[in-house]
Amino acid sequence: MRYLGVEREPWDRGRSWRHLAFLWGHWPLGGCGMWVVEHRETGAFVGVAGFSEPDGWPGCELSWKLARLWWGHGYASEAARAALGFAFDVLQRDRVISLIHPENHASIRIAERIGERLLRRIDHYGREMLCYGIDRASRAV
Image (cartoon, rainbow, N blue to C red):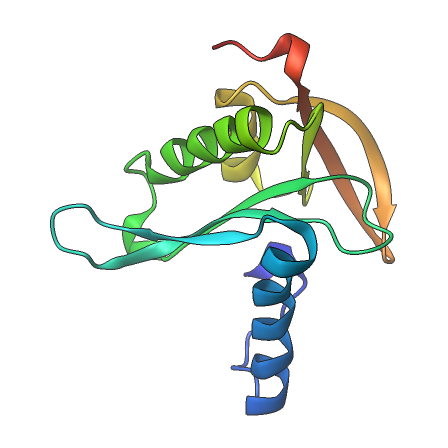
């Protein structure tokens, strides 16, 4: 969570509620959002992957967050690839981006593994972020 600008302390109920509303609201307002990633055999919660694009965002952002227990097993790449398919085939998006903290080397590797390339560095709400992206034409199917 250190790369997401989130405090290390647990959120209080109010902040948790607001974030849940942010995540849930993307589906009725924008037609996409985050999915829960489950372990196929056990049904265990692995993490989340999907999209956010609130007003003022630099594009349709694909992101992934996995519980530490599940790092290094390829689940983030698998979920991100599936989400890209949804973005291009169902949502008919021309481009998808991922905003990644410059020190988050694991997420940079995942972005590159799914075909995203560094587009630019941006100031995103006062934080430097790398803007990775892929467009429909360069997507390897």
